[in-house]
Amino acid sequence: MNNQEKALDRFIVQISEIKERLAELQEFADEHLHVSPDDVNWSNVATAGYYLEQLTELTDHAFGRGEYDEE
Image: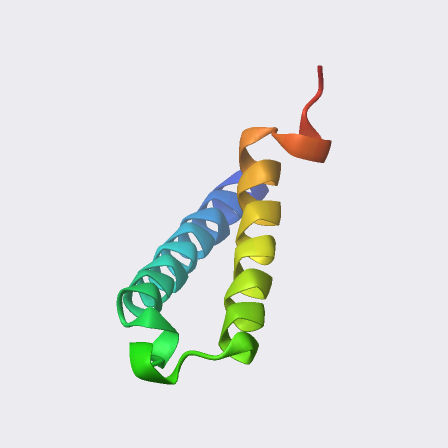
């Protein structure tokens, strides 16, 4: 197996792992971050905000938005 084939194999594994993480995050969001609506407090709001900031960083980087906009 040559170097490019090894790189492709690893890339495919990483894409699969990204999809697994996305599925986990979707389930976590669907379950309201495992917080009952009656139990939501400002700490939960801060945690959700932190997750949103991190996901925004990733999506901005992936799609060239925000600080990653090359225009």
